[in-house]
Image 1 (cartoon, each protein chain N blue to C red):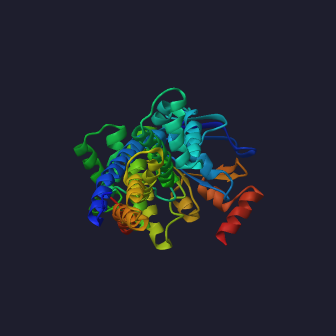
Image 2 (image 1 turned 30 degrees about the horizontal axis):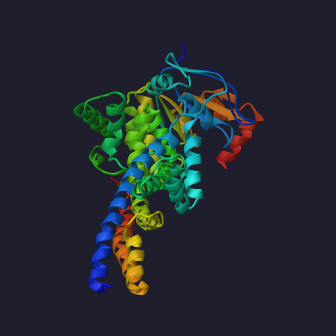
Length: 218
Length: 243
């Protein structure tokens, strides 16, 4: 049996980390885009759309991410469609991220004072003009810290995809543990790598929040 | 035909009827003070005139532009009446100058240079020419309210609605805002203002409207209304506000 040195373990883990990073980026970018669409459906003026988005958000916030992954992976399999783990992982994470981001951003839009709507309306601006020039610029500023903060949840969320067989950092950890019988060393390293990914993000979120509080304008 | 024609205006919030049939005609150049207790419907009346509230009955027209729920009608109406709010409601992410320029550029599609020239002119008019590049949070309450007035004026409205525009100000800042309003009145701007500044109303306004329980209870020239109130409600209101 081959002996694994610490360097071997680390090298394998770092190789797998790239899949964690890629999945995180895909989920965050895809979820952000879909979240934006959901946001506009939610706060828009069409009567039917807001309740639909509300239900969507409730479902994804009210069920464990793991169940969503299972459903994406096994659910489509029931219909004879063979879903590879990476696709199920990406789809489930994108849908999950979108639900949370849409809800975070809705809060930011609603945090803009009612007087801003009234003042811009009384100047004759249409709904879209109000949104574009008055409401969204203010909401965006409020939205940046919690959005960056949520990206940490996305990174950690990717760990669950190991269960449906997507070989990212956690899955690589499991495989290496089975080969080396050194669970503490391996999972300790796995945890350190996650921390190295997440810590800068949460620091950035905190930094941005301080910066936004210090300077309210622009 | 008056500039602002309000006929049989009714407004309810759920079961509660706030305006119970208001008829007011405002001629061009009139300066009207709307007074009354809080809850008498005076702010609601003002907010109905430029469509910030939906109405339940009656009609409102400003210079022939009828109030209707669709965006095109609202826009046409709002271009004829400007509104100043108690809380100023300046756009905090824009400078004083940009606040005044924004609606000109977005709504009227005015070019940037022209909008800026207009903004400078209007800020000068309210005595804030040198504050063009200041952000709202760098200005005092009185200065912010004057920027708000400049912002409304830049759209060249036919009338201005002023909703308790000095109520959020520290006492020493009230004067500078009222001075601007006084100037507007002198230049012939049509003004409809909800106010608690009785001395100002007496001084500047051509007509006083006293509202009570959702109706116009008493109306007349300020010297008559203040010196010789006819109804017990107005007598008690003036007695209380004088105390």
